[in-house]
Image (cartoon, rainbow, N blue to C red; front, side):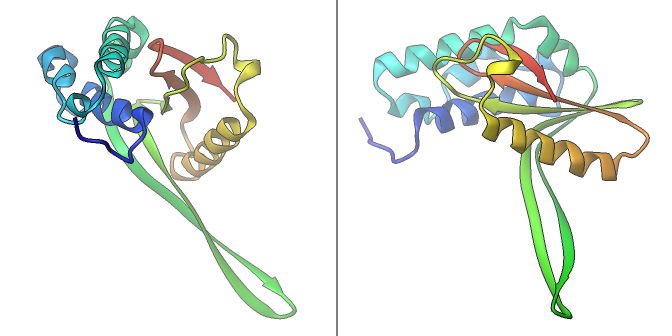
Length: 166
């Protein structure tokens, strides 16, 4: 078995990318995701964990319904900030990568995949770093889509649940 320096969460994230490609959900095969080449490099226990996660995500009706809208994956997003210090212009670039962006007629939904083994049970228990990350994405999207309501969600890969935050 090949040992990778890539974490299980990254492999899980890579395998589940197939759930949100631009083709319709019904055309996707769970077998294709279950047989992702990176999954096969893991120990059997970890392979089982990821396959269980994929099944939970696939059965999540809220997630499935989101995929019926315009879907963009791995969206690079950023903003240039200029500020001055002692009459010298300083340029700072902020950026990020949105795992899944869903565009509805008057709404943008940002979905970030998280692979925590024990996802929080309520949005109040979401780690601050996750909240900050999604707030940054939300602010970027508000500038790009000023006439849309922006909603941020986390898809917990471990249990297949979507959680709305911020």
